[in-house]
Length: 301
Image 1: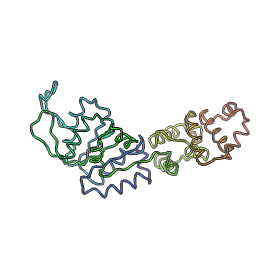
Image 2: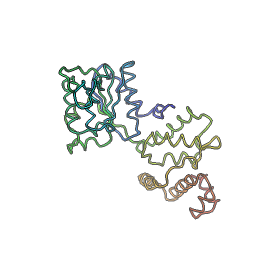
Image 3: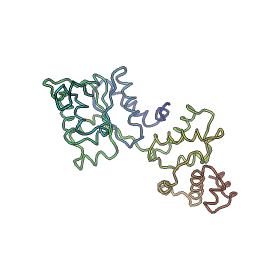
Image 4: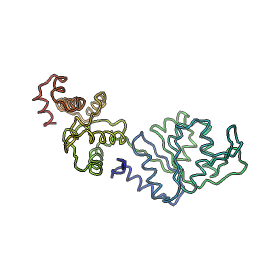
């Protein structure tokens, strides 16, 4: 299934076009943002525009034990350490003249950061146990979570490595700060993957109001479940099943725009209705209002 990010004509697409201008160079790129904001999608898109047909190698630095990470990155020769019965090419070598993506690089230990810094400075690396170095030909992209500046300041992330990686530093904003992208993204995804199905007005209100802690990845998952749950040609609040425990975050967002209390009450009613799977009677009983009032609020919201 096509990722939701690909449906967007928003920040990621604009950044990809801007970064693609750096294609003729080997300038490292640093992409920062919360999980689900599209960093991996953007990295692959840049690679396809800048080095089509070349290797694309991704290393999830946080998923590999620190003791094994140097071997994964640099490779090793037979006998370099216990259990190294044969040589193995590392990611730096496998990437060739393509792209090496270091995902969650901000999670690696200082020793590995220092080794990577040396590679970027010298543009060469040495497999563990080898006596000859090999040239670094790949473009390096680093994907990190939010708050990298704070980690640099506290010493968790080497400032010299940051400056080496940040040939171009792009920050992808979370979806809660890009509310204008939510409905276009959702409608585009539905048009591509479930063309007969549309969003009811009440569902649109909930989508825009929800804080989306999982960003586009969470939005895509909600839409997938809603399509499977929909009994007609329209997705209502009941099919979205957004978690009610996020209501405090919703209220925090609404307060920034000074939403009238009556509107907030109606929106809360829609969240409860969504939790109850669209059952008006049950939601009205929980809210302490009549079915007629809840139905009217649905129409007015």
